[in-house]
Image (cartoon, rainbow, N blue to C red; front, side):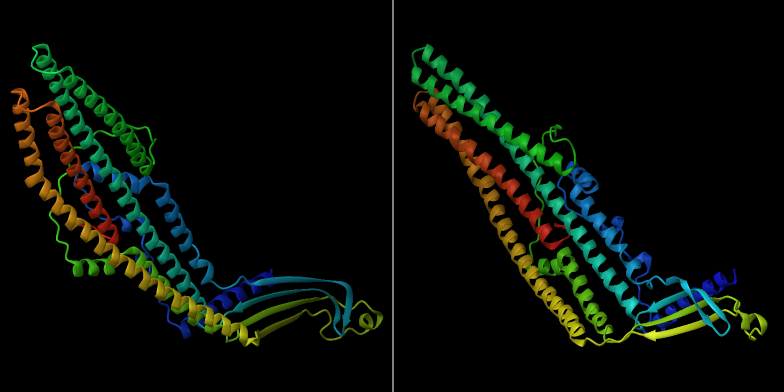
Length: 450
């Protein structure tokens, strides 16, 4: 029992000594637990022109497997910290003498040793900080994955909105063509029109029905895409999307660049890795210095059983031996440590180059989406202020002329197709503009418009 107590005292002293060694050289700067980001602190803000889209995004953020995967990787990375900033396990060994060796005070029966190693001053602290920076980089990638899921949900929703708008417009066209069909049949029955006009309109109706079938299949695909992002069965029905409103946006390039530099998650992840590699260089330099170890030994010695020892036992007959050991490692192979420092330095250079590359790509993406927003906004204004009213006026005039026999059915169908096309193209521009806004929000890494 005394031996066990001595061992426990030794372990307590060793760990206390390790703590003092770490604190003496490098004051602890470990991030407090309340500053380590959690999944709840990563709830992103995003723009949604409709409350239903906001609900879809929230559902995807809560359920999407890709987000859950990288969230688990972040939690796993955090668990790496206590593994590397703690002392190595002490070593306990037991030696049983197979052939007893005699000493002056008796035969050696067995021996116990307990040893503990201590890295150079500040090594454990740096190892913990390097592991923490790794975890924080994964956390920023988790936030980036959230942003990517948000933009994917938006794209699917905006495409669904376009398909629903195209379906509505095409059904209106079908109804209009059926009205023309009835009108042309009446004209033919009264001898004012030709059977050829009826056939042409019926052929146009057949094309419209085919277009409706294609749009319905596209809608099924968009429904499946949106459901998949929310981790729902792909065949679940999604209600039709009403016409979406467009926000007023200020696309100040310099302000957007600054917004991206402050919020883009991939840049923040690289910043964490840069800091990690800076500390990794300091950590590599620690290997130039020795590690320490201390040990405690206990040798179990029996009483002398030989005749001289029995007749005249020595003063310390059968007394156990106790020893303390201290030592250091010898960092002899400096070329290995030089290579370790060079490796960390090159990794730091790589991360800094990666930062510049991601920043360039971000700024290009911002500029590209701003141009798309400006062009698409101009097109929407052109269509709504000029082309659509002109096409509607032309169709009304053509209908009147057809009813009075001044124009033929081909003129009527041409005017109807023009109005159909400009309305569908305008709906396409609506979706394209909202998609460009979603891409711009992804590029800057935060809500836009704000």
